[in-house]
Image (cartoon, rainbow over all chains, first blue to last red; front, side, top):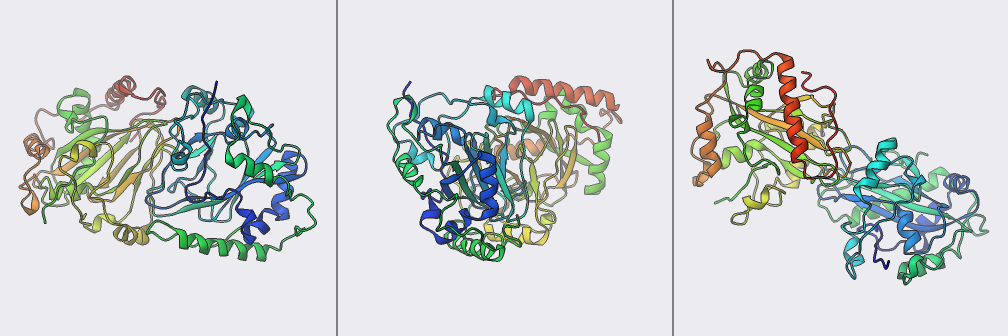
Length: 262
Length: 262
């Protein structure tokens, strides 16, 4: 059945390969501490499928409904298998007040295909809110009854790895504490994008992602083998400054005390 | 300046004196354990200013922005002084996942007057969402910088008392756990409603609330002096059953294990 779906894109960042246009992120995705974990999880060399900032301001931050990233990447973008892992690094404290990420443990073992049809060109508005093509309540109930819900909270600099097929989402944020996370997806080098499923026309981003696979980072001679912690901390602090400047909310982002303590 | 404001009415309950039309709530508001606490806080006999259920279903429960109940009750309904206390009893677990109540400790010591004008008849839609006449970000920042934010969480049956002027609100609820609380407001018998401030026309509900003051519960001969715990537990369990029937979400409310353990 033809589908018109969308992806859980962040509000503030339409560049989904930010490590390609920003030297700070370029260094960050190559951090050996992160890279080694990702390679161990996916079982081999990786490249960056996506990199972005998921930005949820204080007072006006909106919820983002449950979804599996892989479900969309598989159907629309042509990712063959579940051999990708997402890495989220918090740039602000993540807590119970500010719409922290919620995940359903074990959900990565089940492929929940979303039903329904999304209006034409809906992807242009779906960047802000998910309204169509979401997982059905019965499937969510099935997943939650098995293992409940987890909400990893912690200070700025905390790191969470989760499978590309893990069901996740987040509530709104009326608190005064912004919630901003760096989000990077490490995909196995043998799991590069192919033609989308079900005869769908490849989306413009799929083309971008396929191109990105040409620049894998696993053993690139140009990539630094190791980035000293202080350099990364300084680098992420610089990103944090940028975030402050692009904050669309009148409330300033909280100053983090310990960035990237992994 | 003329104002057109609204009140933080619940979505599912337009009857704000539910204890007047339901025998279960009628007994509950007279529970001596609750009543004595309320009387101690406000310093004398009380009557019920409002009683209702604040209902936030799973998956689709919406956020409710920061507000002080007293600010509206004072300006629009003519409540003279801050001599009322709210009592919330959770009918479901309240946790970090399901949009639990958030409060700003100490905010009751500051009267934050909301600015702006709400569209005519906006109260008809404001039952679902606050968009106009909300406190300004600078005032919220001032309050939060003093004492932060608290989120009381706990199993069904937990009780929270908070001042009528305490700034509070809640995030959305995409979790699968409904969040439903009984909400009762004990007002000092000498603090009955008068004409609204600033020459506003009394709202229809203000008339209702003034009438309700004729039935104070402090030492009413008709009110039971003491309600055995088991009776109240059974009573609230019955309310819980009603909630299940009126749940507009396909997801069932979680079964509480210990109701009204105060």
